[in-house]
Every structure is written in structure tokens, then in C-alpha cells.
Length: 188
Image (cartoon, rainbow, N blue to C red; front, top):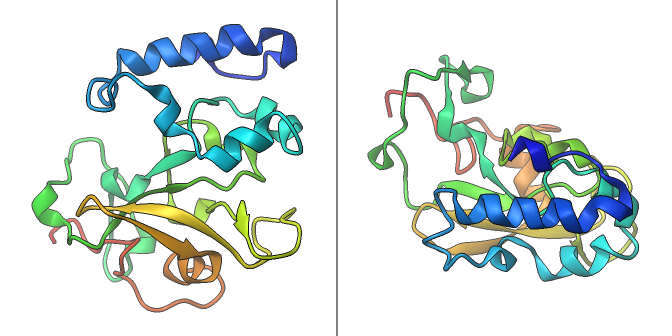
């Protein structure tokens, strides 16, 4: 898919999107999602990507999805805090190492195009506030009453507020980990 990443400008957008859609169909999730890449895009993100948010949208390397997977899936932790871990390619996290309420997916922070560089982010890299109750979200560390959809291990989705997400992500004074976003040690 690397051939279809980057900012092609508005003139190259259709070709880039066609390439990303085709890559999706050949990926691991395509078959399970009926080869329908439209399910990867939040309807509000889709609406603003050609309007008020078009400049930031064009800067995203990957444009076919509004969502990211929790990098915690491949992020193995040092004790005592999960937030101080490191990537270990030789380990695989098994489903038995999770709880049903663990967060595995969320709407990526749309104020920073870099967070769309791949399909995985660490929790402290941000959550969208595109579903907000007031204010304008220009800074991913400013709470404007936003919320985002998160997917959890059990298969359910939950609407999670910006404040609650960042409390768990250990940004700005948070409860001790492990929690639903930092799942604990690799021995769990």
C-alpha cells in the first residue's frame, strides 16, 4: 500500500483512493468486511474530509479509514507501568491476554495527519473529537467536549469521551495502569 500513501493533492486523490481500496480488498480484513472499504470511514469524517477538514485530510498518508488499532496489541510492557513498554516483534499477544472490555480500536485524532501514517497508534497519540458538543477542535490536547467511537475486544463499540480516553492514556494525570487502554504486562 506504500505506493498509495502520501499527499497526491486533489488531482491525484481519486487514483490514491482507488489504490487504497484495492489494497484493503487484498488485506486481512477485506474478506471479513465484505470487501466494503466504506465501513472503515466515520460518516462525519467522510463529510468533513471534502469540506471543512479537506486540507488536513489531504495530508493523511492513509485516507481510507477514520480508525486506528491500538498499538498495545504489539506493545509489550516493562514493569511497573504499561506506558513504559517497548515494541517486541517476536511476541504475539493472544486473545487470552485481554479482557472483554479492553479497547482495541478508536477514531484517530483528525487534527494531526501524521496519526494516519499506518493502522496502529499508541493511546497517547490521540483520539478524535469530531463528535463534539461545542467549540472548535484545533489542538488534540484541548477538550472541546468531544467523543469518539471505540471498539472493544468483546466485539462491541462504545462512545468514549475525550476526557475519559486521555485519563486512561495517562495524559494529564491519569489512573494507574493497567486499564482498558493499556492492558498490562506481556505476562497477562
